[in-house]
Length: 353
Image (cartoon, rainbow, N blue to C red; front, side, top):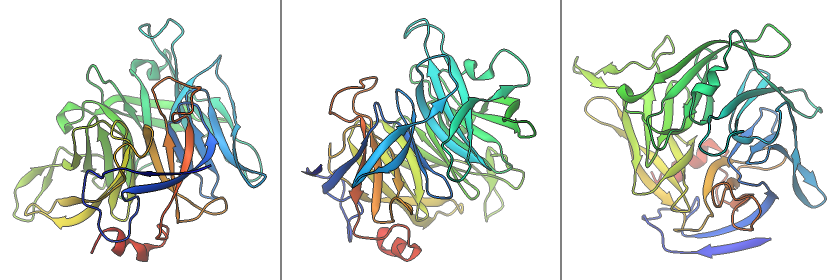
């Protein structure tokens, strides 16, 4: 079903819209409490939600969310996704003792093989107890330079950080051999990380109502300070976006960042705007979908073949937290772009240059 929502924008919409003002969207598939999405290199689309992890497949003239097998002792609330080599990783949380009891967190992995469904198995640990259980909520995942797995520990009512996991791939399934809980934390300006994304030597973190950018060094670390062209040092922290609402996940796009504003019901794009006197990048907002044009957007991706193309902007609409059954959110939606966002030449128009 196609719907069109036209509501006032919060920011000036420039040039041909990415997701400007009016939003034409159609439902791709039902995903309860939809949270995150990932394209494998061969174009398979994996989506997480409150009841499982799914692969989006063709079904007749449309699509469907096909549940994937996962090795957990019961229902699990799935969050982040990332791929390292031939393995797709997913994080999830169970709360066997209720909402205020100790969580039981899991890191799972599925080996990608062409033509075969993904089956998620629990990642082994070199030692017990499970280090994932020290996290309040393992949320966004990303592959860091050097092959480490980054895990955002989302702690809205306390202080969280970004954990770094070292993995061994020698066995039949990945194995955790190193775990640094607060690899990045308050010293870097991170307290409530939600989404993490890596693009080249850049690390982007969504942090409650903001998005921040950091730079990796040659060793794959994120130093607290960077040298400037003038020979001094500057803090390795750039605010890409700061607003009055709560942001969820992020996606590097055209040298900038596409952002899902969960409470505002919007997708925003922050474009690169040059460098400051310290040599650090600056950003400016060039697009915003209409206020409340999306129902609790939680992640955004640009489509890829064979299922989609660069004109397809895919958004998980979570809706209300931990509400799995209504027609408000609980789906993966597609918004059509007038530009082919998979074409690097389109970045000139996207960024408003």
